[in-house]
Length: 527
Ligand code: HEM
Image (cartoon, rainbow, N blue to C red; front, side):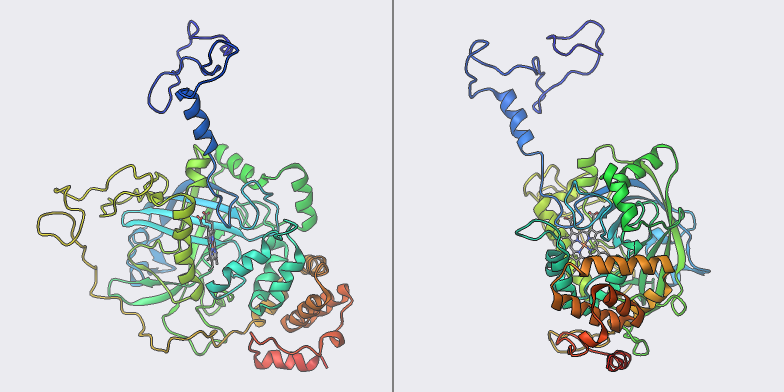
């Protein structure tokens, strides 16, 4: 160790010399420039002012959701198949085609509601966002650890997040506000049954699943399309925590999941997930009792078996948290040829929101940052300037031509691999309407019945704790919903809250919901 309090280089100290950002050597980093050793500082104190004003700007706005997270790097390895069939029958996306082909990836895990330094033990969905640096440019698959979501239309996202975030007055996450919103949002029941079960607190990031949640499309060489959903299965297995487990972990560590990930990678125990894909023909599927574009639903695995297409391995942590975790930017619009959007009303809304938020929080040239660059392919755009532009994309031979078309040089358009995408034709009036097959309760009930006893017990306990903190009319409406989800669930939660079926049978269905025959039957059973 060198004694830093003494001025000037010490004999034998061959460490690199500190400079400022202009490349000037810093001769004294301990003392400001002053008039005499006790006198006032002066305004031309360039080295001091640069150091302090850069420090003053070290923070950028944190993500409005998913602020706390951890990023690591690794690779995706393709199987070249969808199950036993060649994958080229369904998608022409290059990263999937050859068995054994590897594509570099970055993966950011996160919690959703807490701030950048919040506890990782929260009952909260976990983000599972992957950036594939493919030869055709980047593909981002921005998913969560739970297979469904609270809402099915992006216009409700700011509301659901406001309800889940801290109260604007008390700045505390208030279960009363959460259940007030959810009780008026019947499509949230499936998500709530997952979130308030042990799955709502994964043991850590290595032991959880991932899901694309929204419905996407695959496009093959002939332009034919299929609807797909993505699933990530951890080779490490799935482990969750009860509320009591989480409280014990949180008492010692607010960042246990980040630490676990760093420790595992640093000891060479590289975590791995398999990517499985569910597929269906690209149309409305009138035979199903749900809409394939509804992200509050799962696709039954017996009818739409998830088939493996590849795996990922994470083998490197970040060199710098700010550069690679804070500034990394994912979005659902970031797709490569062969992968496409669906008309899922959440997905279209998300696709606007992500890059909008990144232009605000990181800056308009966020895609020039190393972690966000399309490393696998050559980037050539006619985009110019903006805050913090630090390079100019190549425009070919003639640097004067930053527009297209031109006969004097510059860039030209590429050519579609096929004539067109042969997706379904869409017809309809411009309207504001919810989808027809809302079916808000059935899958939530099936999920409840599939749980093990201890998971059901934990779910009931957590619901009673949370809903019990809401106003009485909210509690009653929640019990009404849970009775429609599954008798046993509604009765047990109701019992804990002192609310029986008789107390809620007078409630009318909400204006914002449609009931199925089965729902009506359950309602009439209430009395
Ligand atoms: C992050 C919006 C639904 C997963 C974000 C961010 C925004 C956003 C603005 C911050 C982006 C940034 O600043 O970098 C929305 C909207 C949604 C929606 C408007 C609904 C309409 C979902 C759903 C999922 C999801 C359904 C899961 C499938 C994520 C993840 C991140 C994220 C994982 C963190 C990405 C990262 O690690 O940087 N979302 N979101 N979001 N969202 Fe969503």
